[in-house]
Image 1 (cartoon, rainbow, N blue to C red):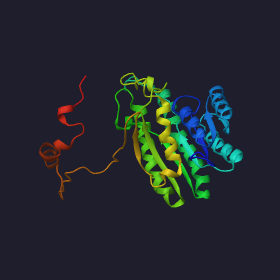
Image 2: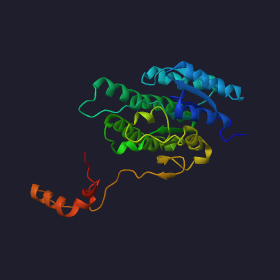
Image 3: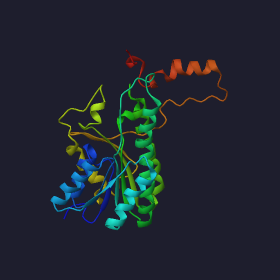
Image 4: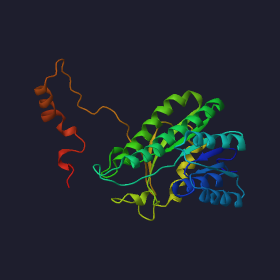
Length: 280
């Protein structure tokens, strides 16, 4: 039996790319899968592939940016399979734009899908998982969260994904629900939107899928609240935000005191360091 035998999972944005690979891999490992996508045709194709291989899957067609559609994906899982053991928050959009050329309509669309869509799906899944006393949520984040030129809106959305991961993990730990964020590198349609550093062709979504299955499985019961970087040949934990030494103290900071602190004590702690400052 597969390591996900008896489990039911929802994968958003599962018609293509990482979502498709994750849904197919989870199904191959025994999971029943709700294949969510805004586009019905590729979602149906994924379901057909799973069923042709002897697995169980159904579609849930709709945009996760609509809270009703996000909840419907979770409810479809409960109705069809009787439970929800995993959620992969994969649905997302990306584009490149200089900050002074970015358009409000595109900003809003990206945030509604990447951030609000994940919040809606996570909230719906958490309600059911909390009652079950078990479950795993995998959020597709990105190293872009640290800030990427010409992708400020996307970077902001992935920073939000990382923040919600840590927040949810703390809230849900006592209820037996784990939450982790994955920072993958894969050659997908979304990655090709990164005109500065797209993933190479050998970094296929299929090479990323095993860690999604691992995080959904009982093999990862000790892992929660983590930001995990995974590529075709590398895995590591991403350090979370914390104070950086030195921590300076002064009971009455004045402007000249602050200037002296930066000039003489904090200069080497700046990120990126002065020697690696941004250039045109």
